[in-house]
Length: 174
Image (cartoon, rainbow, N blue to C red; front, side, top):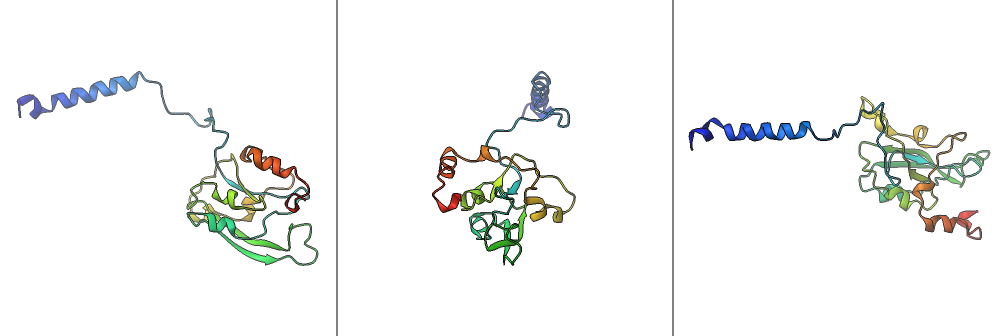
């Protein structure tokens, strides 16, 4: 090794040149509260359990979303609808407990593809932060959409699905 290599002068000069180049580049950091980054139209965020037109929950606890989830983040417990709960649940069987572990979820969207009742969708909302692991277990209290503030998921539906929903003769669309 020569004396220059022993002193690491070429490496130090190379590092200084890289630093000077980065000083004059466009900043990649976005100041979040003031500026909000634009998301893609098909970006997948927090899940939502949809209601039908009458306000009843669509989920029938079939378990297909849990089976399709590669991260095994979805768990549910099925229950039978009792007399007087017809306005709450669409079918006789419903999900009494529906939980998604957001720390395990990889936001792949396979749960919404597997759902035959179009009950679960990924929205454009961000998942809130928390300091404990228990805060990331989302139950029906956080997942079911409120009756007064419906969440628009038409961006998540393909043209074929929207055309299929127009055919009222099919029992799925009644």
